[in-house]
Amino acid sequence: MKDTHIVYLGLGSNLGDRGENLENAIDNIEERIGEIVATSAFYVTEPVGFQSDNQFLNAACKVETGLSPTEVLETAQAIEREMGRHSKSVNKEYTDRIIDIDILLFDDKILESPDLVLPHPHLHERTFVLYPLAEIAGDYVHPVFCKSISQLKDSVPASLPQPQVKSK
Image (tube, rainbow, N blue to C red; front, top):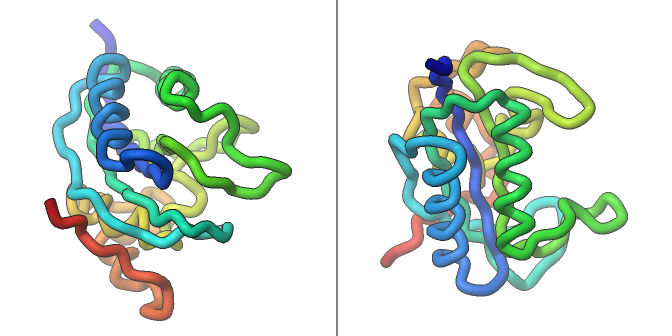
């Protein structure tokens, strides 16, 4: 029997029916990566790192998986491609996207390879990641900063755009 791991994924969409895109991604993650044991609310956020008229919908989910970090990455990228996303950036600049699936945390693993850095290297500075992640993993201690996700969220400067929970 394979070892079971806990992986936290960040999800985002700012094109098309954003809610449906997140739901489709969640369904694909459940089918191909592992059992989703928690999902955050969907948060409306402003684009970060590029200009766009399209707001994002972001969420986070906690998944129990038997896959390795590389297998999770490859599967997440395959889901993105199948949903219509073909590149992470254009000329190294972020662009609008149908779906984005990022590995935020994988167990307490610290990893730095050309293809994958764990924990996600920008997790601690992005409100669109920290708010949904704190909802489902507020007490989780970041293995590099040794602070809980809630503490990291609360230490983000108030000047950064604050996500809003999407009302149904």
